[in-house]
Length: 290
Image (cartoon, rainbow, N blue to C red; front, side, top):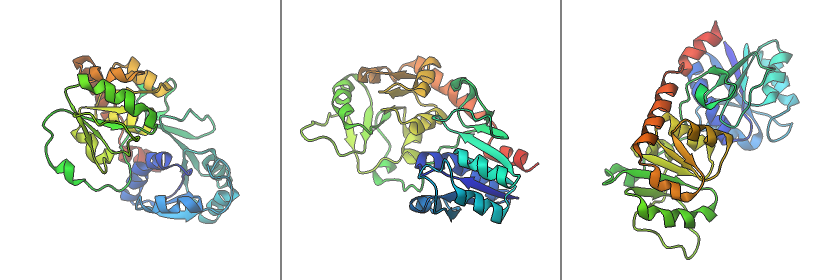
């Protein structure tokens, strides 16, 4: 079976599609991922075959080139987390499959909607698909080859203004706080903070007891998969549902002192069990091919 995946120019959205792409290839299907010229290198790094599209907008919400390639290659299934994939599927009478990540909403236009967010964290869930965290090629850093002396918390911030309030709050935390960042000038590093050159989530998360982020929903969903309590310094629909499930906290940096609470650990473990019980990509692939 030929399967065309359409990836918007977003590594987070591409990485949501990759486990399904691998499962399709492992099952013997012919898989190609289409994307913009500037995004082709990201697609190739997943180990999949890339199709370079020359026209349309950067987000792949519409693309005549995607339709033209579909008409040439004639896939049986078009998988996407962009609306252009549905248009391409309709052009060749293929099955239109939509894959939803934490930032996506349902799409009634698709023939099948797969949802990597656990049903308890989604108001209107699609057909469940177990989330397999993927962040691209990773090398285990040297510092991670030594066992941590205390519980480890991963700190990952996109907004540098959060470092100062987080650093003030860590004094009450009995844990090693790991962070890979260029810190703002003049900011003093707390004793409990471990500043490293690189902290790839795929390598670090399995060694952690909790996660602190400023709204990164990809990292937040990965924390759910690993059963880790999390603090989201900014509120979103996803972080609000994680908090409501008893697996995390949203809001002020002072919440970091609560991440070791047994109630949060229990809530995070329950979400991990819910996610682990969802159909794996290989199971969903078998249903797609039937």
